[in-house]
Length: 150
Image (cartoon, rainbow, N blue to C red; front, side, top):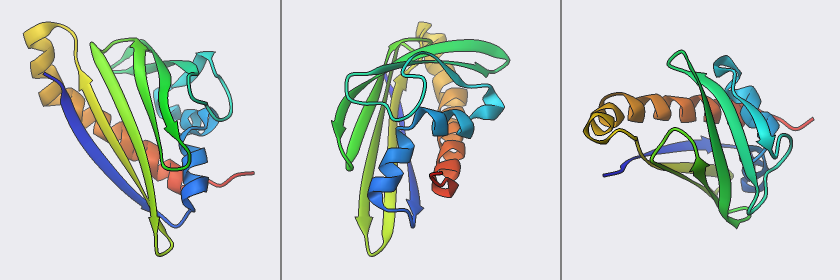
């Protein structure tokens, strides 16, 4: 059974600007530099587009991990979805929604994932992974709302 969580972030950036920042590989890399996250294959710089893939390499829990994600849906500047095509999860889907009202843009991240390893994976996903992944999204989003284009 999959575990899911939602993270909501508000910003004074326009919906279009925040949408562009959220799918920019360089901005993502900068936001998670502490985890040595970097794009090692596929789209390595700039905004990722519908159907494109990126392979990330990062260190989590002291272990180097690789994950390849594909953009499976895009409705600019309202929504895009990335899904793992290869990596550490049995399944991983991240929906990015953007709404704007009265000068405030709301970015809602909905993440749904399933850990590997059967029963042990289900225990770990509930006790550790969901909180850890939520923290990563929160770190990324704080960086996004503070980011500016050069």
